[in-house]
Image (cartoon, rainbow, N blue to C red; front, side, top):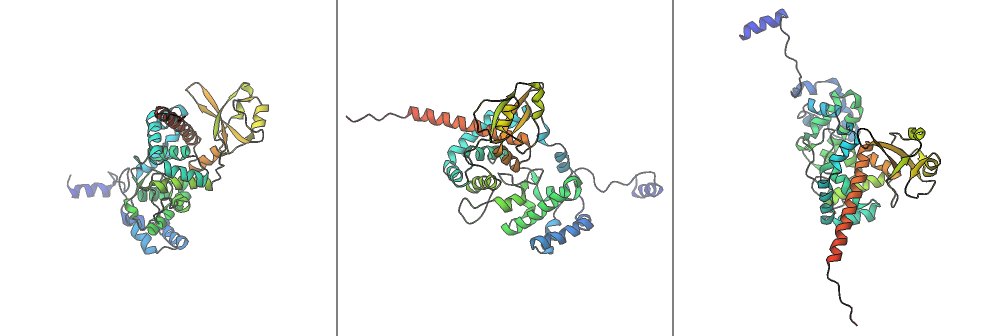
Length: 351
């Protein structure tokens, strides 16, 4: 068709104009900046975070909306059943890599454990789940992701507008180009996959080089994860999770999907929940059920520290994967250390 003929058809209403925005098609920058909600955001963010509105506009001029981000948010990995989720994160490869990571960074991990009271195994497991020990840090533009979720994802727009503003403040403070950073489909960044607000609040200079880098500085990464859990109430030398069983089927309703501890150990024992390990009767706990197979449930106790892990990521599946991966990593490390110690030549006693 000639351009003239197409124009006539459009005027006659015989064909529909092409939509301004389709999946994977960037929205024009000017159209985005001219939106009233974006203009209001720029003014609010500038006032709240003491930023120059011109700086925010320059950054937002680089932003593009990304439909693939919304698609990913609507189909999160945590929507899978536990037995599939576990298979991905508590794998032999990730366990072996965790033991190797621990051996390489034992000094920093020991210092973090002593400083914050968080077990090295949990820190290692979280790095393993979040970025596979730095190998997978996310492929999405953090700027595009947060902009998309702030203005095109109504269900959580308030949360993501705040995170976008935090990201702008973080980029300005750390003097980094916000358009260059990659992260998750939710806007998390760095090896620990901190949201921008968490980066600004919990990240620490544990590497002691007068700057904070959660992308490449392993000391900062380890210390910041430990500080995050510590600040959210981690209790040193306290349990995280344990297996349980329900003998009386009438009591299966005790299991729930709440993050907080709703019972005490004594209470569950009185109501027919079998607990293998002896714990203080007044210890707070919750009872969880996870899909062991398509047809079978497994029952677990989640203590206060399990709840603290859900403050890092709200999914019960995530918290359980972190616990089980940490447990497997710690077991294999102890086994390898014992084997290495056994192979050492024994010193002869001097008579």
